[in-house]
Length: 335
View 1 (cartoon, one colour):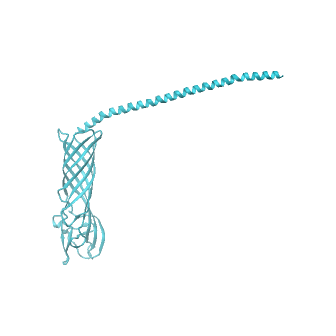
View 2: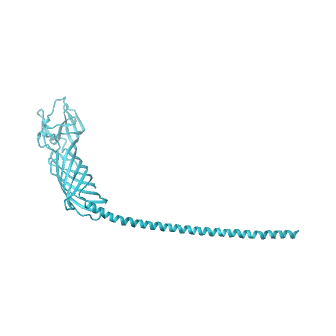
View 3: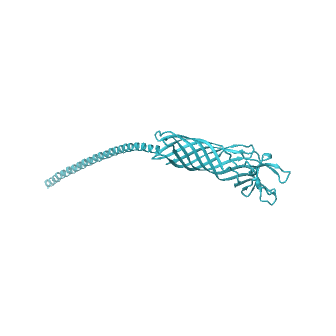
């Protein structure tokens, strides 16, 4: 009986050994297949990365080789254009120059402009031409009274939003709607249509840039004018109100309808794409005509204290003599 048991156990042990050996062989084969797969995967990833790098280099070289000749063609094209036109935007400073001691300037005014510009070279010359256009100028001009009391105080008469001229006369009756205004500060807001006419000197293109200078005259025509005043208002029955703002006042014939100025500009033109350029320039204009059209006494609105012992008082009307210089920064998109 014992012999039979021993033989049976021996036979079971001999049968389990081939099974274990076969299992180990299967594991080894699976491991080798896994290693081969990982190696192939890493190799393919490396090939893909190398391929992407090569394609990127080819693409960069292609773009670079294409853009250089096209950029040269575009620059040549814009250099040969006979007319350039485009949109203008700009801003600047109004520098008032007083021609009378009865009024003072009150700091620096401002200018904002929009419009269209035009550059046209002369025949057989790309370096010499005409620069003109049509611009709308929205401006402020600031004044103040040199004194708010005594003989140098500045006054005017008004009715509602209308400033009265000397020739209009004033109703001094206590029931009159006419008012007297002691002026402290004035902010005028004229709007002009401007046509510049300037001689243009410019270089050939240096890369994507060329440089220029302009000299000529600027012709401005008055479209509208609003006056904002700060001061003391007095009715004809003696009621006085301090720190009154007279807004959007009008004065017939106050501003001269034409303003001429001479000046110069300097700047650069950048051909940034195709035949389109961005122009930046800075310039200065010197005013040669007066701001105000009140040389005739009957057209004047401002006066100093008159002789109050007579009724009505005899006021001393004066002209607000001034001219305007301008410093301007302007940008133009030319096509």
